[in-house]
Length: 79
Image (cartoon, rainbow, N blue to C red):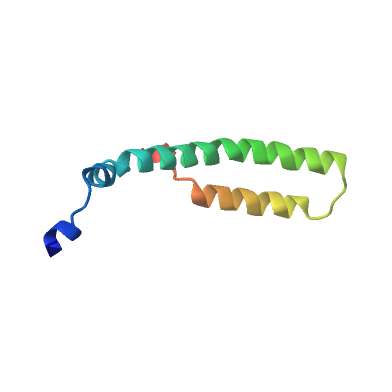
């Protein structure tokens, strides 16, 4: 066999490489949507914990958690 035949990429693999942007767009859109929805759920969850238990420092955990979520979520208000 010649070297050219050994290094040939199958057609199905080429097609997968060319169309991988569709899956990447779907996954990144899902991640952004989940993070946007997660901020409201996170606030409700922390408030429930603050009401049911008296754990000190829950406000700081709320602030740091929201800070992390907002850093990961793009600012869609300016689009």
